[in-house]
Image (cartoon, rainbow, N blue to C red):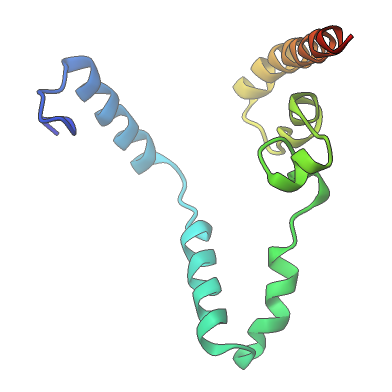
Amino acid sequence: MRKNAEGKELSWDMKRCVVCAAKLLADSPKDRRADEFLELMEAMEKYGNKFGLKTLKGSITLAPDEAFDTHTIQGRRMGRGLLYWYEVSSETVNKKPEYEKWHKWFKPLMVELAKEKERSKEKCKT
């Protein structure tokens, strides 16, 4: 942890950030679904329909409609931009109370900024 990718000494603040991030990760509840999902995909490729894996694949790889937003090719093809992201796709469930409070302030601001950006684009077209 003494040097960065360029071989330079890390600043005290950078070291503190690394240690804080490591502590947060160590103290947080664990969820290995991302890893396990990749293992499951690999098993599906390797074993085909053995153990009913092929039928399982369809049920876990289908993304909900709201997942297709400005960050995906499909979403951009559907014309879903930043406004859709802030109004629909960025929404989460089971928010921490602190985040819920923040998000109630943040979301309307970002929705309005996205609308303003769309209005500006329309003015440039005319």
